[in-house]
Length: 341
Ligand SMILES: [Zn+2]
Image (cartoon, rainbow, N blue to C red; front, top):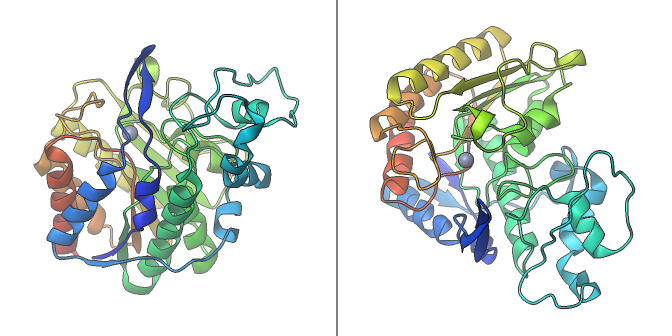
């Protein structure tokens, strides 16, 4: 398996996170990069840093004003008195409040959905480099059949113009759009992170050329709360091309794999030219913020089923948090995928 990673991933290392109103150590720590990198290396895969394809593949799915905000926010931090190590706000634009302020603090609330995505000195370098990993994996998948992008921070909660849920740039969406443009045909995304891929759904919801499928925990009492329900099926040219497969909390391998199979059946019927797998490992039983109970065998089983679909496949890392199962589940997934190809 070709693996694309960037050492810049470690330059974004948020310290605090408000969980249910209480400050805790941020779950999306830079050490995730080191752990996933070691697992990929020890699994015998071919690791490489990606080429730099610039901003065009990022702007292909993200709002230009949002991209500029992310790129320049840290350098403008002096506009906000009292900023020390990170830029955050407690004021967020609701849909009824739609004016675009010129000041940085107001723009933070316009372009962020919650307090999980502080902007720090190395944040732009990390998310930019990570997006390039997604681009490289998309290209490699079309050339050689499959590749893995070790994307950290994750991306699938980022909308075209908003951060959220630890995510800044939507790496899976960037990979999918890259594959669609390069292959000249429709592509599909299968998101198996424990959280609904709401940003990805939002980006492609009215598109007829990208099918989005997400297998996740029921959002009625779980992040991202406001999207991810089974009756969200796409709209306009994308009507019928969004499929959500929510599962009750506590669900384990059998129902999870059945949902993955159902998603793959939808994807096969769509006849895409490429597939992006949004690989969250936080459906694991011992993940600190997950609510499903998927085992290592379950992740291997998903990889086998996905590999046997026979599509050019870019595997893009999403969630999966610090626990002993994190590297083991990545190792199992990549090994099972390779073995089934
Ligand atoms: Zn997740």
